[in-house]
Image 1 (tube, rainbow, N blue to C red):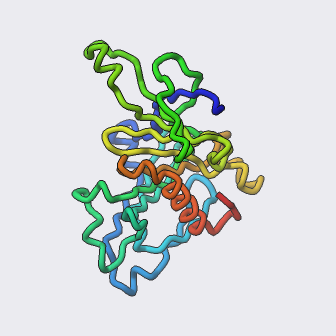
Image 2 (spheres, one colour):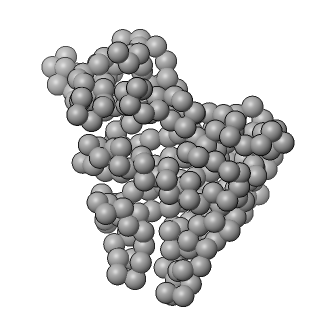
Length: 251
């Protein structure tokens, strides 16, 4: 049976510490839908601070951010990609008006970049806040519910909570680093974070990681698609795998 885990929600969305540091970054590039000729072109880039070279069709990209990380004293890059669910289709001339915040429940949002451990959520031994709720055998998922009372809820409300954390059975599938796949669902969306492992890079390039596990991949989608988690996960990893030009990696 899968080992019982809890998530200490510690999303690694790290922002610059003040206006001075933020000003040292580079301006975010936003990609409006180009002409048909332009949309077929690829954008080539190296994701700082490591030697990860990508080639991405221009129509796939929503934006590329270049924030300055003051503790690292350098700029890191993050590429933001979007696709439409349920077809998992990238932007084209027929659907580009559907890529907007009003249509958020149909968007699969993918972020590639930033150094990270293989856990934007930190896995720790179950401490009593979460308990296993059910095993969704058909979907290879174990669900967990938070039973902690934060002081403003009745015991009945606490007991009536539904699960918001789902962990994939490890014998079925794990992250590229070999760790459990954790799906954290909150405010109607489900979030997953894994890394492109540093050990898949040539030895000469690993020094750029500074001991961190890898390059972060995050993605999220509306909770109504949770039962399609495996299809989403496979799509994200295979898509990014196709973007990577260097090094030779198999996610």
